Length: 325
Image 1 (cartoon, rainbow, N blue to C red):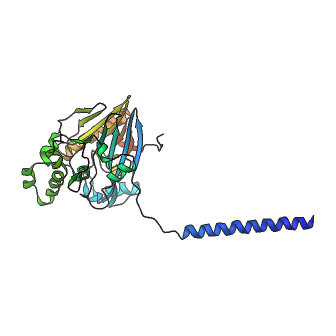
Image 2 (cartoon, one colour):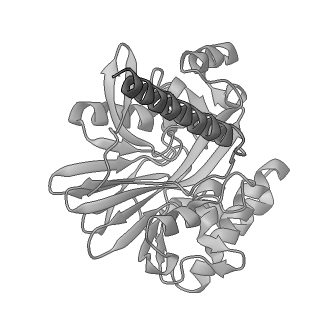
């Protein structure tokens, strides 16, 4: 019995040493692996009734939020950012949204492409990672013609979405695509007009740009809703299927950490900050009252969730993660 015990004990010790050795090798291998800084294409998918909605990341851009927000003191902005574990410059998402209605593939905004520097321009890769190709897109609805929403319309000198019809409110088209407005603009403002023209003119020339005026149903289940202020023709889009609603806000708001708690805060990018503020307050109140899902370009990706009234302002609840089956 003693001999047998010693053999068993030796076997156990040997096995333990083997496990320890394997653990050490494994730990050494992991510790020695290089850190990967590669960014995966970003997409996130939810179902809305019978519609498939895919959020597409164009990347992020660092913005000096304390210098950009208006109707608020910089120190108040910094305090609000700190409350949400943020500082400035603030890494800010740029999102687009793809709606598959079953009969139409509709893209809401296209990202920046090369108009905002190297950290953006990833929407095309996100689209492909999500299982779609640019030539499959039937319709593109633009919330407004700032570069981070229209830049992705072009791939160099070529239309990035060769089979798509592009639609936007005519008030934005008349403002941003006007050569006269470009010539009258301040030097620091000319880039906005030039970016819009470079992004849209090929579609205009090809007869693929079809503006609308205000509230308009564009395809069954997707409706443009006028929300002018951020730009002269800023639009938001209501998506509805089987009684479920999603409102895509575009640039109705920019900084969740500040503007949910205080909807009166505006931003330097607004063409008409008072009108933009009024539209934001109206949209917040409606979404909180009705409880439908919302999405916005500059909410942290995927930028989908719900808002509720809280104190004198509102609070944001992101969608609960759930893989689509």
